[in-house]
Every structure is written in structure tokens, then in C-alpha cells.
Length: 189
Image 1 (tube, one colour):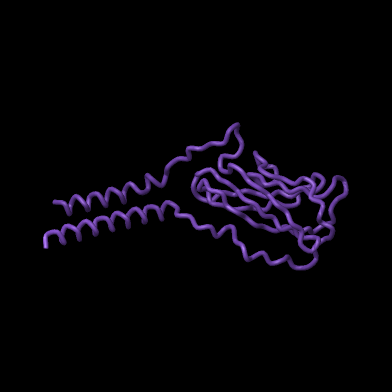
Image 2: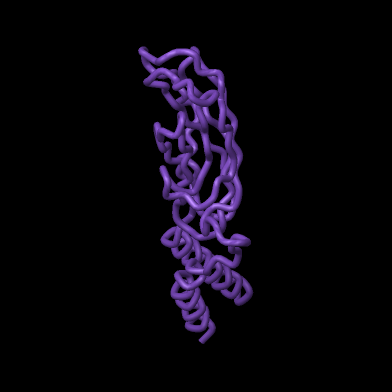
């Protein structure tokens, strides 16, 4: 009888796993804005006078899956590039690193080039989380290969996901049943 009860408990935990994995996000941004990104930082460093190493962090709301932030690059009102930054939507703060290559001369209407960490590409954003609107350290047009930044991969942050959560709950339930069965058989001996 106890064995059947333990197996029924394990089956219930396996079935309940997907429901636990679909927990809705309890946090929402104040005053509108992004529903996936909570905060972000942006730091810039010039390499060889024409490449920019972009680093920072993105904090997401716990929405699940993968979230995209973007570094939008502008020069005198011209959108130059939208650099996607993929991070897990797990409610955590995740580092990122990207690079930008200056392919054209910097326009002289306003000082420098603008870098903006936002929740959408080009004009599809609702919130700017960090920015440097007049980054002045670009002096040349890049003609050679970009510097190697492969030592850091912000997209390699592991996440459990719904399937992994179901498998974990099932394995934990099975382990509990086995331990309980061994204890029962050991107490009879």
C-alpha cells in the first residue's frame, strides 16, 4: 500500500512540474516601459581607435525564456547599428560583452557617436536603460579585422527551462521514492 502511495506521489510531482514552471511574472515595471528588462548598465572602451568594446549588465524580470536587449548606435540622427544582447529572462542580473566596428567616418554635426542600451532595436524601444550620447574616442574608420573578444560569451549562461524543471522534479521524486523504499526494506530486516 505504501509503495503505491509513493508512486502516486511521484507521478503527481511529475505532472505538477509544468504548472510550477509556468509561474507568471509577479514583477512589472513601474510607469510602463519594458515588460522584460528591469535595468541595465553600459561601459565603452575603444580598441585601435575604431572598435568599441561594449560591456555592462542587464537585469530582467522573471518572464522565462530568453530576453533581448539592444545597444543602438547613432551618429547625428543616423541609426548605424542595433546590436542584440541575449540574456535569460530569469529575474537575474547578467553580464554582456559586444563589439562595434566604425565603418564610416564620424559625422561632425554633433560631438561623437551615441550608444544606448534599450529594450528594442532602432526606434522599436520603449525604455533607455543606460547611454553615452557623445562617445568621442572613435578616431578612425576600421579597415582591418575586429579584435578577438571570444573569451567572454554572454549567451552561454545556462538556464533550466520548463523541460529541465520537469525532468528535475521527476528525478527528485524518483530519488525520494527509492530512499523511502530502501528505508522500509532495511527496517524489516
